[in-house]
Amino acid sequence: MIRIQGLTKRYGRFTALEGLDLHVPPGETLVLLGPNGAGKTTAIRALTGQLRPTRGRVELAGVDVWRRPVAAKRLFGYVPDRPYLYGKLSAVELLRFVGRLYRMEGRRIEARIEALLAEFRLERFASALIETYSHGMRQKLTFAAALLPEPRVLIVDEPMVGLDPVAARTVRTLLRTYSKPDRAVLFSTHQMELAEAAADRVALLHEGRLRLLGAPDAVRAQHGDASLEEVFIRLTEDAAQDAAAAPAHPAP
Ligand SMILES: Nc1ncnc2c1ncn2[C@@H]1O[C@H](COP(=O)(O)OP(=O)(O)OP(=O)(O)O)[C@@H](O)[C@H]1O
Image (cartoon, rainbow, N blue to C red; front, top):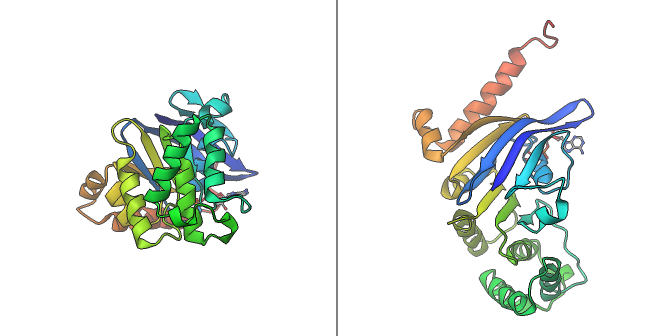
């Protein structure tokens, strides 16, 4: 459902992402892990058609995101790490606008809005201007907007920022179950517990490269039943030490 092939992104001489290959089949939730600056947001921005890859391809349900941008954008819902919402609209106005962008039928838009405002406990604030919303309320509304058209692919960059415990539980359940039986979810997080709870597989990025890919249980078993957090720290620290030990200017 999500196919990333040889994805490379360079900023001048700096390589943010190098030859990333990932496939997320229908029914799977894949979690992107990695330290700050690993390349997670870069990969997500390339996948959502916001950042042109230096090399490589990204496809959603067989649609090339860069060759067929409009068709690709109909297929996914996206929650960015720093959402931008129009402050002068109310929640309902924003959601209606999103529904029309996706060319949804009017009655379906209204039914979805009602269900999502209830799910995220935003009914009381449905007509309030978004500029009066707290950070967490904006995050919940961003989820509601992403889910409105029931997209086949859900892509989320750092889902938990600012959410209260009730919303966090709703989102955790959503991230685990939304992909079943035939949709795909890809999200990035620094929360290992969330990754363990929601992921069918985790992908660990470090310094722009894929270091590890597998089901959480299998990953832990391969590393002597260490916790996912320990595996993360070992792999990223080992790589940092290898880099420090390597000569600064290797012989050609
Ligand atoms: N516009 C840019 N110009 C130059 N370098 C950039 C640009 N955007 C990102 N980078 C660099 O690319 C690397 C990967 O950044 P990215 O935002 O993808 O990391 P991340 O894994 O999402 O990190 P975090 O966990 O901190 O959000 C970083 O070293 C970052 O400084």
